[in-house]
Image (tube, rainbow over all chains, first blue to last red; front, side, top):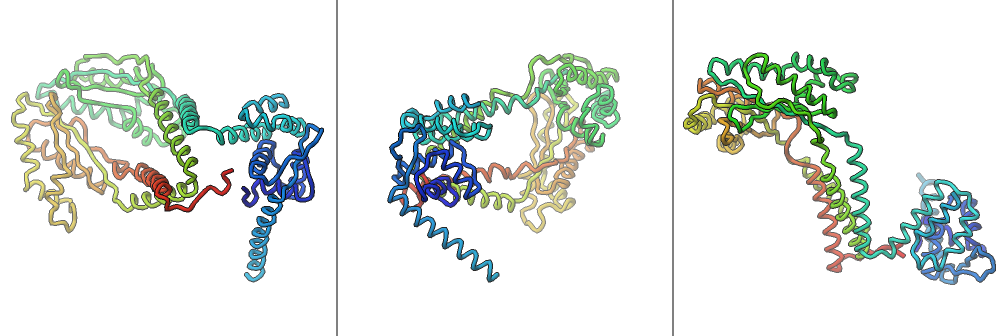
Length: 98
Length: 396
């Protein structure tokens, strides 16, 4: 479902520290990654992630719909981040020895 | 803008709207509207639609895009009008030399430069290119002097321009030089073209439609079979490989000339052609121009690549030769023309051998495109035979 720098990965990362609605996710993602997701792109990712069972809507009275990370989503995010971490560490190590 | 954004939600699939419309509207109410946001929402709607489209809908959408794109493109091409006049050359033996000289004078540098200045042609080109190049362009692309089959001995003179009246004036000016020299008789005056000869917009739109349908079918096929990555990889590999192979194939150039037989009785034409293409004559040309070096079958190859053909009902023949060297190709054609003219066989040159600017073969774009297509086919074949383990990782 996700690829490096994919909007879906950014959404998962944003939900990792708590439930958020769409606009809160957009602001949070821009803050931590400097990537400004558009509403169409964000909801494309939300649709994919919900269909895959990685996120789920949280009951709310507000028109703004918050989402939460599911157990499957958390596991998938951890595995994605581990892969990314491996890439990051390897690249840094190689840069230091170059 | 905010209202337009909300209206764009209607472009999303109905099922998607049932689930997400209210929260998406709430989000659009929070964001600051901009052109970027508008295109992002449009793109999102398109992606969602394509997820649920049937192959038929995908092909139809691509076909529509192809038609609209081709129509818009065709409107950017200026109309070009062709005006034509027909002149019957006087064929009395003592006057044919003068007629030929006048035809050559029409296409001469001084004559064309005078017409360019008088008619104020090629305004833009003259500001950025030397006049020699402009004259070459005029000769190569816009002036056509052709042999008319009916009546015999008539020539058609055409000029093409983006301005219909200018096309007519220039054709009249070109024709008047023949008429003023009393070597021709006007059969059909230069017409004022009402409809443009090009671009053929209906043809461009049909091409756009066919391209759209082809791309749409490939898109639907790759999406259905989930072979996008493999198809792109094999397509690119096929494209590069075939492009590389096409560059290994030597260029071939072609030069053509046209002669007219001045005598009424054409029964000896075949005999004369036979003499020019006799084995002694061909061998002499092979030696003179060093054709097909180190090839024991050089004479035979020359006979295969040299084409002399009669044009029915015109008493005219065309001479065409193709070879990998653009200078030699013109010199050999000129040599054949000389063989006909110098023998006192009553021939006159209507169209001198041209210097080919570009090779006629190989067509590298077609070869590379063929490689791309074969790559696509290979990907589909691999997928269908189950030999590919590829799948779309993010295809949800």
